Image 1 (cartoon, rainbow, N blue to C red):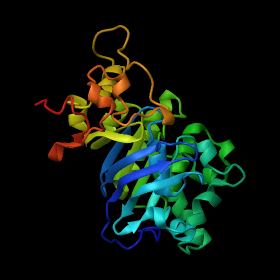
Image 2 (image 1 turned 30 degrees about the vertical axis):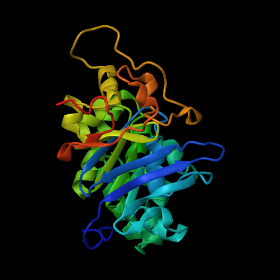
Image 3 (image 1 turned 60 degrees about the horizontal axis):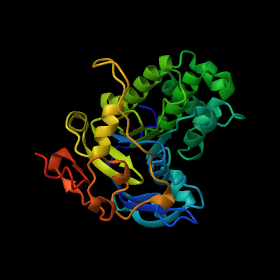
Image 4 (image 1 turned 90 degrees about the horizontal axis):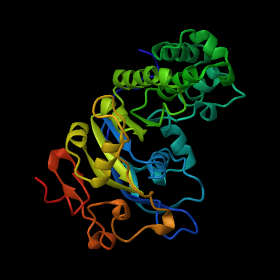
Length: 330
């Protein structure tokens, strides 16, 4: 076992609890009471349209929010530790060792001036104190596991010398080389061509499974998440509107927004023709209503939906949702 693997210890869940954020000049929060739980060793998908707050929720856990972001309330906890309260030094020690991240565009996530080997081994050398030669061997092993065909060449290369698929595999290897407890992957296949996406996603899932990590996979593709994750949370306008086991959300979604996403997703089977669409557009920050933000686009909305924030309806082990209209469904 490599020295990158730390002594085993109880792993705690990563919990977003009523997280609220806003930016200067905006009256309404961009994250409005986000509640998520990423369990150790499990997979969670975060689904929603662009602008729903998925990436901000991920960046908040990593301590990578823009400096202008204002923390209104709530916490992101790992056991008794609130990640939002950590100073820069404590956060550096956390990233890579406890939290790893894979971003959607590896070209911007990797430093173009430094070799892959230098970037991958930096945490091993500077934080874990592993000698350079041994750190290099650990990095080679990680690249091989992530199916880089010529790992020694990749270590010597700078990012622009690698293909898009290779760069994303490098990013996965880099994010997991210190064996973190959790891996947060924000649209990790968006920048890749269709032929490469499946292979990279397979590497990501295998790496997470082999290391026993809790994996948060962020996407706007409901069927992609349906193939990859055990639990799913649906986000709209900075709020979680439904969550639960992936199987239930795909077969019996309760929130109208989840149903709209499922109906609008293209599939090979079924009748041909124009796909249904959700009318309208997500609200801008200054357009948000005091009630349900989805009400202006919802065909089931009642007059009260625009004025009263919907309460969370628990379904026990099957998750829950926030919609008074579908609350009475069996």
